[in-house]
Length: 115
Image 1 (tube, helix red, strand yellow):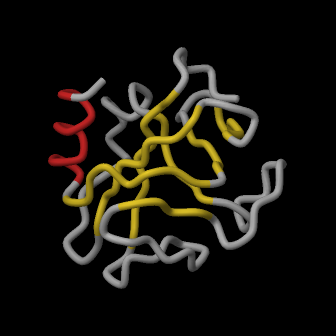
Image 2 (cartoon, helix red, strand yellow):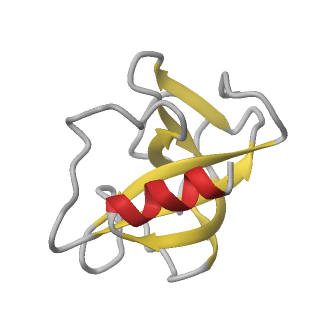
Image 3 (cartoon, rainbow, N blue to C red):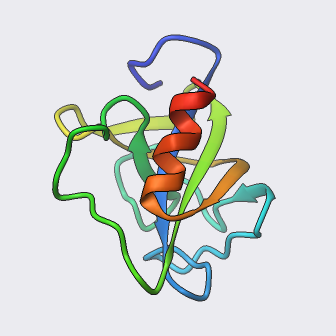
């Protein structure tokens, strides 16, 4: 369970130009996304990966890309959200609803407006 308070949380994830993540999970434009495989451990090869909203606002190493997408996924804050790194807010999760797809700037703006 993520350290964020509340029943649901926003997670920021990067997709390549074919709308797949680094592991190969295919994301739709909108709607529900679920990991092809999910285990309740820190192995990011079996789950979806992203950064918790609030933890990503000031990290300079998260940059925009020209040939991919940044998505905001809303998910339940439960035992299927596994914190990977306390300092950068990275998490592994099973699935959620895609509520925004665009650039890093539009994704951050979306999260600020809908926190």
